[in-house]
Image 1 (cartoon, rainbow, N blue to C red):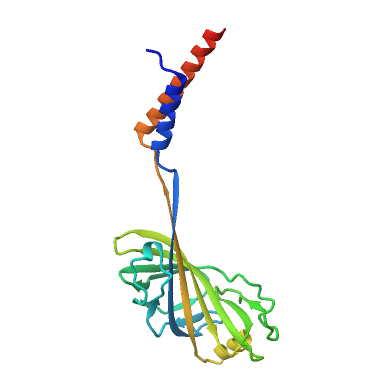
Image 2: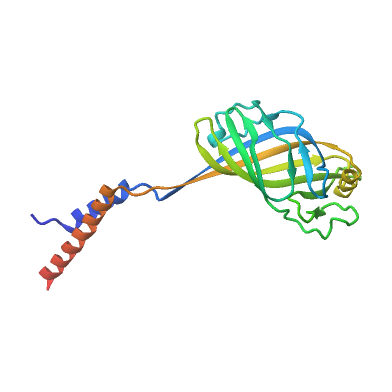
Length: 237
C-alpha cells in the first residue's frame, strides 16, 4: 500500500507535537523586609558589616517556588561583611524551610570618581573593592538620604530538596545623611541603623531530551515524505 504525501506530513507533525520543549525557564521571585545596622568590619574601609538585628519578614509579592510562604512569615538572616567577589555563607537566609546560601557579591556598578565629592542629589558612588553602591537622594527638606544597595547570588534549597541558582538585591536607606556623611560616620566607628529589603530572583533552565520514539517517528515521517515526493515526480515526467 502506497502512502500519500499528506500521510507522511502527518507523521512528522505528530512527532513534532509530541517532542518536549528544548528549554524552559521559570522565574521565581521573593520579597523580604527587615531591619539591622551597618558598621565597618574592623579592617579596611570600604568593607562593611551588615548586622541583621530583627527577623526577616516575607511580604505579599512572593511568587513561583516561594509562593507557599505565607506573607508575614518570619525568617532569619546571618550577619555578613560585604566586599565583592566570592563569599561562602551556607545559611545566609532561612525561612519556612527554605535555605539560601550566599556565594558571591557583585562588584559595585558605579564610578568611584564622585565618592569624595561634595554631596549632591543624584550622585552615585562605589568604593573600589566594595560591592556596595551608594546614592545621594533628596529627603525633601533640603537634606539628603543615602540609598545603599548590592547584588549577590547563591543557591536556594526548597523544603522539597529542589535547588536553584538565584540572584538577589539588597536595598536600604539611611535617612538624613548623604553617603559622604555615612562614610565619615563609619570611619569614625559609628554603627548606623537601617531598614532593608531583599529581592530574590531564581531562574530554572531545563533542557529536555526528545524521547527516542519521537525521534524515530519524526525520522519516519520525513524519510517517507522524501519517498513520496520522488514517486510523484516520476509519475509526472
